[in-house]
Amino acid sequence: MRRDPKEVRVLVTRKFPERGIDMLKNEGFGVNVWPHERPMTGEEFLKEAKRSTAIFCTLSEKIDRPFLEDCSHIDVISQFGVGYDNIDVMTAGHLGIPVCNTPDVLSDATADVAFGLMINVSRKMFWLHKSIAKGEWKYFRPGSGLGIELRGKMLGVFGMGRIGAEMARRCKSAFGMNIIYHNRKPDKKAEDELEARYVTFDALLEESDVLTLHASLSKDTEGMFDMKAFRRMKKSAIFINTARGLMHNEEDLIRALREGEIWGAGLDVTNPEPMDQNNPLLEMENVAVLPHIGSATEETRNRMSELAASGIIKYYRGEVIDNLVNRRSLDRGR
Image (cartoon, rainbow, N blue to C red; front, top):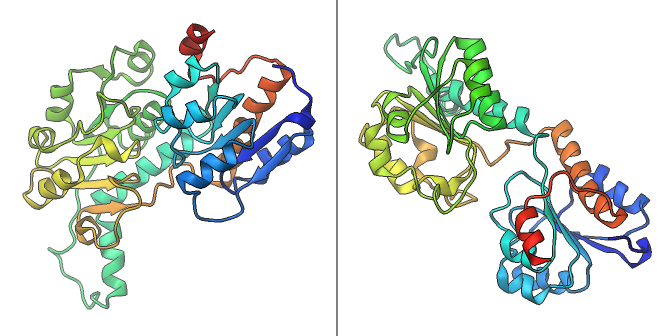
């Protein structure tokens, strides 16, 4: 949709890296950046959106059906992130509003975090670091703080997409881990390159020494990792989630760890977010928790900002948006 840049007003919901903001400004668009560190309230977001023609947002903005119906004038929505479960993409498509995201650019950074969590949990690094700060490192204790080794173990990947494949490459290369995975359908490329074996969901739970989540959040995956799932896992297993916190039941995870149903857990996402500072997981020996930093490198966040901005720019130039997530519903809406 070609439009005079002076008529375009982009609402930027956070202080995203300047790379993307500068791209929008250089295009001649009016850019309204939310000036506060805190996210907007729902009322503030709706008020600002009604004065805008495009939205540059992230996961914390709730863009549901009522919001979209109130803001059906919006031309395009660009999400700073891979996931878009905060957006009713079907309704957006029916209203003729394209939604785009920032895939690919954060695969390495997120896989690095998953890999790091796995190592930290296996050697209890977070816990032992805190023990030093508490003044508990007094002398050598041969039977204290023991971890488990990863070499030759079985990595189970739930969601062998871009990030899952990068995690598998790291684990295979560094520790010679064997790879199994569960997707909606087999991935021949992963099988050929990584010697990965496709298994059922139950087999994934039962065979994995490390189970790492990289699937998208959906009605099917929400709450999928509950006590029933944890009880099917090995008692020596490590559970890693860098995908979405809503995919695991956090009360069940706490219980599974306390009762020894699984050995440890590494989380970059929690349920809910942010995590309460008194959450029992933070005081568990075999647990490592991070504040959703999967994409948090300067290089990755800059690329995400550029890609999110380019989606808006391409829309107004009338160019094809490569990273469009609601193409089917958009076509039906037209």
